[in-house]
Image 1 (cartoon, rainbow, N blue to C red):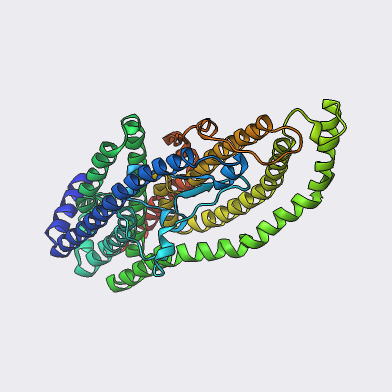
Image 2: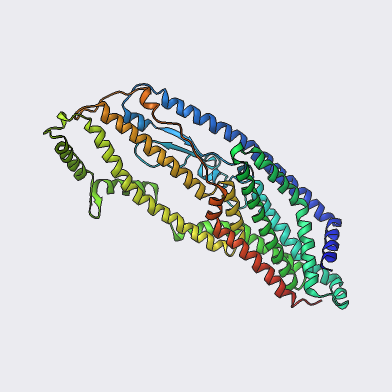
Amino acid sequence: MIWAIARRELLLQLRDGRLVVTAVLLLALLGAATTVGWSRWTRGEAERVRFAEQSYDQWLNQGPKHPHRAAAYGLYVAKPETPLAVFEPGLRPYAGRTLWLEAHSNAAFSNAPADDDLTASPGLGESSGAGLLHLLGGLVALVLGALSVARERETGVLRQLLAQGVKPSRWLAGKYLGLAGALAVPLAPFSAVVLAAAPWAAPSGAVFDTAARTLVALAAGAVYLLAVLAVGMVVSILARSSRTALMAALAIWVIGSVLAPRAASHLALRLAPTPDAAAYAEAVSDEFMSGYGAEPGWDERLKRLERDTLASHGVARLADLPIGFSGLRMMAMDAWTLQVSDRHHQRLEATYARQETVRLAVAALAPFLAVRSVTHGMAGTDWPHYRHFAGEAELYRRAFNARMNVAIVRGLRGDAWEMNAGREVWASVPRFQYAAPDTAWALRAQAPALSILGAWLGFALLALALAGRRLRP
C-alpha cells in the first residue's frame, strides 16, 4: 500500500503544472551556474599552471644576486582545485588561492576575486550549482512538504482516506516517498551530470577520489533535502490551513537558509574575534626582540651564537672564521622567527577552531550550514583544505630558505656579507609539487557536519512519525 500511495502522489505532482515549471526553472538556473562555473574553473586552472611555470622560470632566471636577496625575492605558488570546484567554489571568492613564499614570514592567501567585486557577499547571493541546489532545492522541498497534508485536509481527501481505514503512518510514509520522487525529478539529471563530469575532468590519478568526493557531496545534499521535506510535512500536519503551513515553511527557509549563515559568521567573529593583522605582526615582532618566558630575545641569542661559533672553531674574531658567519646568523634568525611565529600561528589556528565550533553550533539548528560545509569539504574549497595547502607550501618555503642560508655559509668566509650566487644555486630549489589529501581525510575533517546532517534526517523522520499520531482530518 505504501508504494501505491507513493506512485499516486508522484503522478499527482507530475501532473501539477506548477511543479513542472518549477523544475524547468530550477534546472535552467543550475545549468547556467554550472556553465559559468565550468568556464571559471577551466580558465582558472589554465592560468594557475601558466602562473606556476612563469613564477618558477623567474626564480631560475633571476640572475646573479645574494642568496638572501633571492629568498626575499621569493616565488609564488597557487592552490590547485578539484573539478568539483566547478559546482562549489567554496572559500575561493573570499580567500583567494595564491601564496607568496619569501624569506621572512608565513604566507597568507591573496588575490581573492571578492577583492575586485565590492558587491560580493556570502549568504543569499549564491551563484554556484551546489549553492543553488541547496538554497532553492530546500525551498522547493519545504513548500512541497508544507502543502502535502494541509491541502489534502482542506479538500476533504484526508477525511475520506482515514474513513476507509488507511493507517495514517502508511499514508504519510507513501506520501513522503512520492514527494521525494517528485523532488528528484529536476535534481536527478543535475546530479547525474555532476557525477559524470567531475571524474571525467579529473587528472588520471584522481578519478576514483573525485568520484568518491562527488558521491559524498551528492549524498549529503540528498540527506539535507530529505530532512527538509520531512520538516515541511511536519509543519503541514500541525498547521490549521495550507496558507498557515506555507507561511511557516517560508519562515523556516528564510531563517535557516538566509539568516543563519550571516548570523553564524557574525556570532563567530563576536565570540572568537580574529586579531588585527597589524597588531598580530607587531606582537610577533615584539616577541622576536624581547623573547618570552625563559626564552631570550634576538639580541641575546645573537651574542650567544657569536660566542659559541668562535669557541667551536677556535678563533678570536668572526673575520677569522673558515665559513660564512652571516649564513649561520640567518639560520639562527630564521629558526627563532619560526619558533615565535609558530606560537602565534597556533593561537590564530585556535581562534579559527573556536569560530568553527560556533558555526557548527549554529549548524546544529540550521542544517543548511552543515550541508554547505560538507560540499565545500568534498570540493576541496573549505578551510581545512586551504590550511593543508598552506602547510605544505610553508614546508617548501622553509626548505628553500634553508638552501639559501647554506649557500651563504659555504660561499663566504668570516663575517663578510656580500656575495653573488647564480643559476646553479637557484636550480637546487625544486619545483613545488602539491599532493591534495584524499577523500578519507576530507571525510574526517567534515565528520561533525556529516553527523549533524544525519542527526537532522533522523530527527525530522522521528518528528514526522510522532506528528502522524496526531493526524486529524
